[in-house]
Length: 640
Image (tube, rainbow, N blue to C red):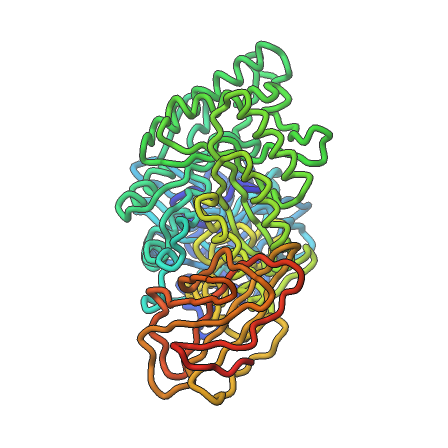
């Protein structure tokens, strides 16, 4: 995925949020489980993490007359902490809010959690570096889910660099009761059968309702951070799989395939990897190159070897293209020390260790022509050299306005001649179109537009059966998305399910576009119900996108009769020579101009007043006139 700070340990999810309103569904008020207002003259259970002094103070107060002052600190990590072992329940998403103010000067404050299992400590960041001064109070608000059994659990506040004294006040911890997942809706994996559909996960996605949602809808998972270098080899030749092993065990128990992400990346790689034997940063010397490639080989042999055949796909190298460079190659420490040999070595060793696995090169913004073309040229060169690259991963981090379907189609088409697999590896659709935007809650029009983007993108993906071999969403639901903190801190809503794990219009865009909430036609059309018509059916035909030589369309069918249909057969004729190349939502045949579509297994029952939609991709020459007549089970329909 794109560059971002280290988010979390795999067994915990901790996401900063723009506002409390974005966390909780307004339909249900949060339940507060802990408060500290320091109005009784005591520390209210808070203690220091070392020898610092933690005491009640009246020098500053966010509200009332008192706060908690932390002084005598000798290290930045020292600060006030509170035992929450008996407060937090595994699988519950808590919102933690703390107000912070420096006594003097300024620094960046962080909100974190320390947990211990079997005597081993782990530290999870809830809110990252946030500027704090002595001039005003600053709120740190984040979301935290405990996803494993622990014997020690404390919330604490620390600073990034200085050891200055600071105050905290008005601490609150709350949660919104979980809603049950919707079991009566189609599973994504049952509707999308052309390729597996997966989700990136942390430990929070394998417990309680999150785990139920994951196993209901998805075929595969990607450990989002748990297999990266900083998580698996934090110090040289000391390997740990504490973050990834629980995710792998869950996947195996549920029959989910696993995409391994990632063996080589310029981010989330410990600094020791690029430190030479002399203790200095590596440079492009023969000695440093040999040491770096040895470390790379050792890492891959251990990590890929640890999981063996349990991982069938690996993102071997991640984000190596920089289209601003004349040669298109990112000037990472990997490249400046080892040139392309780090890529060659990574794929060679991965093939030796995991001969069963498909090996991918993965990047973002591959729809941008310059980046796409540089990646194509690199893969073409490496394959000509015999480097065992099996496929290209397109991250597809996009937004509601960008890119176009035509640009995305050109991205896939570019790589088809190479004869390699292609996968969508990290898809999400941001509701924002610029860094200056921020909404306290996702606007309805943005969510509607997002639904149509998902509809059109998945329709495009399904145009490449056998070429696109997997599509993975970068997250399970809107309560846990990296876009809440990148590129700026604000609540985003980029996935198929909302913060309460309920299906959004985006979900229906993938599963059944006729049920997209808010419109029966297009994002610019107003919501309305079709008129009864003169027969027992009403049809709406529309072109949803076009490009030279081709177009995308859909047909909405409404049963306006008084009885339900147990199956259906839709017919029409093209008058401009159009030929359908792919159709979803049913099965089609075409003889000359005549098209016949029969229902899919999941949408054959059409209740009285009920609707369903089929979508298609087609080629055309010259004009592209819309059909003027449709039949449903042999009966003429009203055409809108």
